[in-house]
Each structure stands twice: as structure tokens, then as C-alpha cells.
Length: 403
Image (cartoon, rainbow, N blue to C red; front, side, top):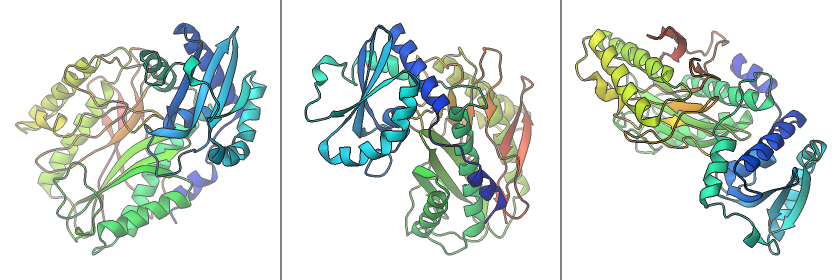
């Protein structure tokens, strides 16, 4: 196994710590106070995972789906209470699994209650679909921290680095003739062996080059000298990583392919660099097209602007999902400080795709940080090209894997 994966697996951060419990408790107090809400129920799986630090969903992960365990957060005279709501069947498991994390919250001054769903009075709490919940949700989950020593940040970085490392390892383990189901099985095995969950795998093999969201299917197989894509929504704790690798077995890039890929790398870095706190969704949408057009003009590629919009635009990501929303032309959201985001432009001519995830800076002028693998072994590795943007920022953007 790749030594990079072994290293990342060995130093993986804990799922929940005392420092994190105190940070989340204080964030809850501040947000509820600012929104003038004294009680709210969280039902989304991603929100409940953020609050409890444990997995509660029985079926495959869907961060936006309703969790079988809900959490009611209430604030009275500055005292925060978290009521963990579960039915009789779920409570047998939940009581055991939440014990340690509940103790960490209690050390941070939070009262923890285990509330039977059968008798819990929801009528006094804000419904999780109410307008108030939207405001609370955005303030809580859509921004994080740039403290590189905090467990919350370490989990986000680990999710991205290990997702990349596992996708790269899979790119070297697959072989011509494998079908989509077999590739899916390999990815699942690699991820779960290394304590990494997944919200999704997209697998685009020979014949699926033009599929923007290729689904694994036994109809399609890996073929020599044909490009294929491996995509994963990795999940570590509540943190989500969205990454892609482009692979070819038995051949390299043609000069034309390399030119288009280099242009896509540059344009992707330019677009990512536009993610600055305070920019609106509509401004960011327009800026992406402008960035791709400039790169296209510089490389003599007419119509390259279309690559900005061929796939969806990507957007902010959080524990609530792989994308909290995808950018739209007239969107009204504003990009926040310390907000995670993922973008995945596709060149419609070559069908090449680049995906990268980053986190915005702590000020309007600060460049975002993109996650990459900077320490890899030589056996199974991918190159990351350093791309300098027009604003002077330098970002590492992944190269394709040709073997």
C-alpha cells in the first residue's frame, strides 16, 4: 500500500475533542443569541453529525437527509442545553456511542439530555424547515476556522488529503477490462479500510467520457489508451471532501490534449482564486466566465469560456453536503470567510475535468487555500502543478495520471 496513505491513516485526527466541543458550544451560543432564537431542532444528518460527532444514519450517507437522531439546542440565561432525541430502537445504540462526546460537552458547560422521541414536545421548538433555521444553519455550518491546529480544520484537511491519496492509489490498482462495478468495489474497499466514508463515487470509463455525472455500471470498462475519471465525495467525521482524478493506462497525452489540460488548470486556479470573502454569487459566476475567456484568448482557444459553464459551477461545501448550493447567474448568496468550497470545471472539447477543494481566507484580500498532496511516495503518485494566477496567488492543481 502507498506509504502516503499509511502515513495519513496513522496520524488521522480524532472525530471529536474537548477543544472542538467547547468551540462548537460557543458558536451555538453566539449564533442563537444573534438570531434571537432560544430553541431549534436540527434534523439533517450533516447537522447532527456536526453536533454529536458520531454517525447516526442507518442507510448510505446522505448529509441532507433526515437523521434518525435529532438534536434540540436551547439557550436560557446563557446556559446551552443539547437534547439528543431518538426513538426507543435508536436509543439503545445512541446512549452507548454518545457517552464520551456528551462528557466533553458537559466539561464545556453544556447540559446534555437524552430525550425519547416518543414523548419529546417539538411544538415549543422552531421547526427545522423554518426561515429561522436557515439563518442558524448558514452561520453554524457554512464557515469554519483557519486555525490549523484545531481539530475541525485537521479533519477537513485530512478528508481532502486522504481522499486524493486513495483516488490516486485506485488509479494505479485498476486494470484494463475492469467494469464500473468492479472499480466501485475497489474504491469502496480502499476508502473504508482507511476509515474514510464516502457520500458518492462517480466512475466515468470508456464510453462515458461525455457524461458529466457518470454512474458506475457494468456496461462500461476501462480500456487501454482511453481516458477515465474517478470521483469521490470523501467523508471523515462531519467533514466532506470532493475530489477527482483523470487517468489513462497505456498511453500519454497528445500535444493537443496537454494544451487543453494546461489551459483548464490555469483557468481552474483563476476561478478558485476568485473565492474571496464578500464576493456575491452572481459576481463569482461572472468572474469564472471572464477567467476562462482570458485563458482561452491567451492560448488561442476560441470559445474556451464555455468550459466555465459546461458542468455545474460548484460552490460552497460543508458538513451539510458536497455542495451547499451550486452557483447560479443571478444567485444572491455572499461568499463567507473561512468557507469551504469545491469547483469542478469540464472542458467540453476534450471532456477533461479538474476538481479542487479549498477554503476561503479570513479577510477580503486573502487568497483561498486549495488542498493538495504535497508529500507522496514515488511508487503511486500524481503530480501537482503550481499555477500562478493573475492576482499573484500560487495554487497546486492536480495533473492527470498516465501509466
